[in-house]
Image (cartoon, rainbow, N blue to C red; front, side, top):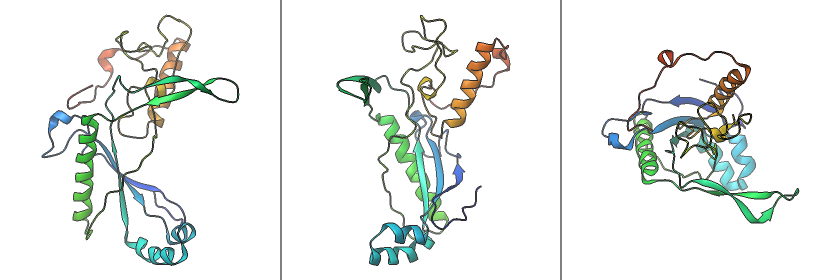
Length: 220
């Protein structure tokens, strides 16, 4: 838990992972759902700064009683989501720009709806008189453009992050991860980079029998 002491900042305070692997009454075939995070509503000073004067004054009073929950559904790996080089647009150095091709699968949308339902239940139990849903149209934490895996037909990187066919080329950033897992992937990216660094340094890795495997619903 992190206490936000600034009246002008927006901060995350509480993360709820109770429903990551499913929830009562939710079809287990959906698989992993994701996470719910509490984020503080903008402070009065922040609201008044960015809204028109009259609206900002009214909203500054109301935000003192507003609680926001952010739902982050896990995207299952999908081969239809990919990046390509734009044949018509280039950057300042003449390098083709990337074009992102992405869409949510029915499973992803079902997971999002399940998390929204649980978030509204939490707010209602906390005493909220009503709740509204606002869709955030963002493209945060894009991963998996050069995924690693055991199957060479679906993963250009092997399980060590090595580009198949090029022995001395490794990829250790977020593009190697097939999924974000419904959470901020920063620590996972760092941990995997350290693992690949240990492989490059020739350090011994734990045998498979000692590695923990997390349970999954549906599995991927």
